[in-house]
Image (tube, rainbow, N blue to C red; front, side):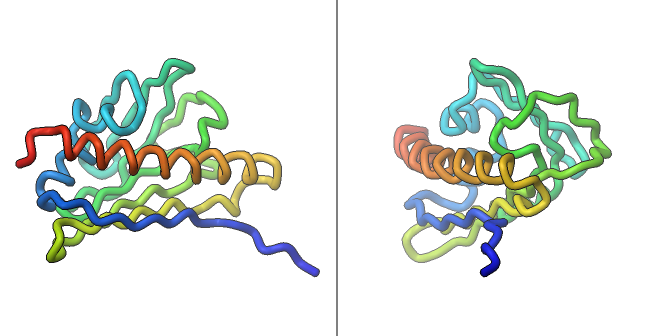
Length: 154
């Protein structure tokens, strides 16, 4: 019997804030670090731009994939902090795609998060990264709710 390879993490949350407010929290470094559990974030927002997420345990690089305000933001990275490599803008090798889609709804803004591409990693790395990122996104999205609630409400 073949085992099913887990390739995708998916989450969907509705926040009671406007789409513009949620977009700002997702893409502005000072706001992003409040919910992304980082000590600093640098992002060059045009597609192809570089991002760097600083944590107490090290820094992780990403490549900005999509920026379509205020509805779609995506980046590629090595998942789960598997390694703190120098990720070139034209990275060769497996990366996952972290994709945020926003939609205005009656109750505020629906955020749909999909991280895909785990199947490209070997079993040990895939399993560790999938588990770490799945738990991590649950924590980040809960932190985003708190940051949006405690922020300036816009």
